Length: 268
Image (cartoon, rainbow, N blue to C red):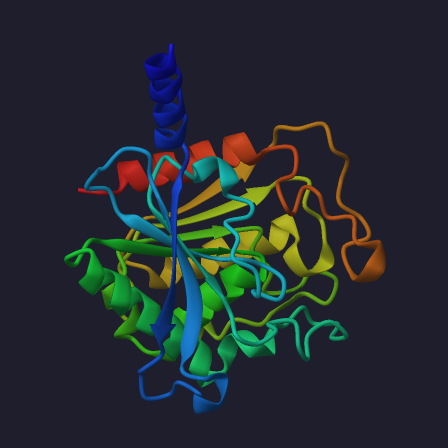
């Protein structure tokens, strides 16, 4: 009886995702030393060992949480890296009416992301890494591309969800697309059709796709998520935030399926 009980415990432990936290030294030229030269990262291992790429995921909002949100349903299917940013990505952005995320474009941010990519490529014997993010995490992903033409050469693909890069009301997109050079990657822009927040409007995400399509030599695909019973997002900022579709609250399973499918279809 004891043996059976022990076996059941071992099986349950086997099915739990493996987490490993590390301090990754930020050692690129533009890393800001006042942030102690490191960033906390978490590696979330897939349940089965595969040769599929790792997805390095940048969370939305402040970026100061070790979370895969809204990709919790992806955990266990592919390897994930998440990071806790050492400074608040919302600083200087909350009161703006143009939907900009200025912190995403400071030189330190791109080099901090680059340091993490290089660290995990070395750790896992040059295993391919995809980069992506949710909301302001999507803005940080695009900012990484604008920082240097060489940055895109370190990754194998891009996933953008709930992309927040400007103001729909003011018809403004704050990404300097003209700075993105030599881009040749599979890119998926995944957005909920009922996300009508001003800074992450569904129609703005479509415009982002159209702009990327003009400069990207690889595949650029827009994927609409329509499932769920939640109404349109309305009050999408401040203390009364009501952005459940923006955060895929009722469609995480479908979001995960779209992410994993796109990565599998575009991995050699």
